[in-house]
Image (cartoon, rainbow, N blue to C red; front, side):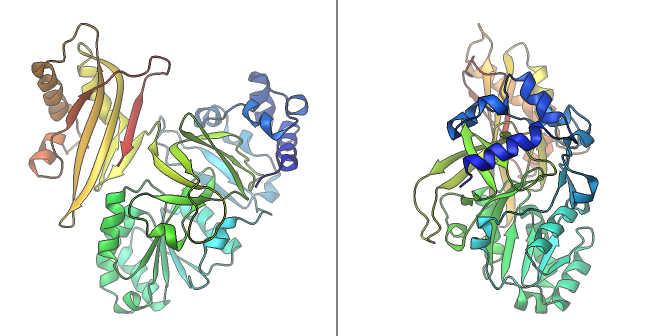
Length: 411
């Protein structure tokens, strides 16, 4: 539980910081002064919300609040928002995360398999916790699995998509099959269907997922009990290092573990809810459930990346009948070990346009013919190949009080 004194110290640190004026300018612009406007924990809601757009609006060096000598690593996002990469700085944390309560004593040697640009910060994170780590190469999986076998790796930490690809290379290493016990997943949204499929692929492994971001690190984790939940993906929030709140169904996080780039009331874009149902593991406090993204630029499902710009091409071609607001729900299933995807597209008809079968068919065919998954792969061909179902068109009325809805949500 984060105390009032911790909040006050963090706000004072960023507001009077000698290395960066970012928060002083951000707070001033939003009519907030932490020296006069923050006197109790109830005043947290007065602190202006922070978005990724706010962070990208300044040079990356403006987001560093400590001397260079105190920086231990840098982290970067994938750059899906307008093609821009957000760079943040990390400093060693003096806080002890309650995530350690979820860790096994027998994780053994852990092989990290992430893109090189993200692996550095992760490697530092595990080294801080004295986790013996082998850094794998996602571009050479046979060699990585061979090294893992020789090193008696007990845990592999990677993304859900990489875990699926990895199966055949692990199967080719009998020694690794014998030593491997845990699969720890993170770095991307995982649907319940993909989770179930991974259990089919790895029936003898205990599979955990962690919830994290490049900007905030790990802020929610699963214990053994939650990892086996087949109905809902629930997590223990890391309440000693992060303050989590939900504003209009969106998760907002404050990071108390990183002085180099502290993020205060940062809008994650994750749709979430708290549940008071206790976990049978005995760890106190609420659990958190994630339900996708509130403003997702892209999702990865079934080996495909579905991006906002792909959806916008048919949307723009239909401006005579629909508004620009939309929601795309990507439903992912694995049938016989192969992915099968179905898109449910929520659209708003323009005034005067009838909800007629001919209108619905016109919109459906426009999506089928104009949506492309890459420069060489058409949506129409993937439907013909049995990898996608015909999309389902649903006409809805989006709330007028919010800005245009442009969401891609993975199920």
